Length: 364
Image (cartoon, rainbow, N blue to C red; front, side, top):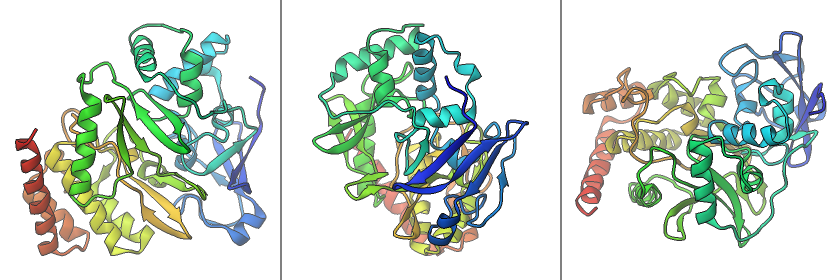
């Protein structure tokens, strides 16, 4: 790939700032002067909206800032990138952060876009999900670099998470469609779809979800709207928190939510999501599985995602509850109290979700 010394960051066609790397391979970022006058911080805790040069730390994002790391692929997306570049005789291990952001270009999650744009353009078409599912299985279990690799990279090169997935436009609506990972049960798509409906029934804001071809779980992208892209930042990106290991407690997350959104309703919504994760044993509740969005000048909790039973970190919740990886009822109440929530309302939320989950389990 061509050497890149500066990457320009924009949002909705408006320049936001520039990224460069210093001699120690640490990210340096500076806001655009006009954006300082008219915009809002893209990462309030680490990149406040002001002039001057911001320098990233070495960890946890290999010299980068969390908000830009959110744009980069991980897990499945990185595997695809490695195989795709291997086909082109490019050593992925030698890519710089700036080159990786350039490959994301205009296709990343959220609203941030990067120039020069080296991304692969997507188009609306009818994809053969069965064939792609078969191809992903080969990629996960071998060094396979078959005919569908370029298609998969084109539609999933910027994706995050461990599960194979693609971004696809169907009848003008943008979806993320997931395939089975190596250790997933055969019916994992149907399972995640059922839990998405349960979450909605439990009062959790969810994107539109659907089963494609009866097997493949799809979720409509909540960072895309007919009016344009929505700036979205994960808790990991917001707090520069390592999402690969336990790095957060729900008490911190709830307090940060209030500080950022200044809306106690958003805090209750996040507490409800915490309770749901505990009740259904979704222990893979790491820092990238919570996000916030900048909408009409205000920060809001994003719709929920990745909600299904999972093992988490060594069998415990990756985000702890009152410091516990295997929380009790009292730990949930203590967390509510520490976050300034009503004990009575917290009990009602716990009871409601527990009751609905039991009904769900008895009917499945």
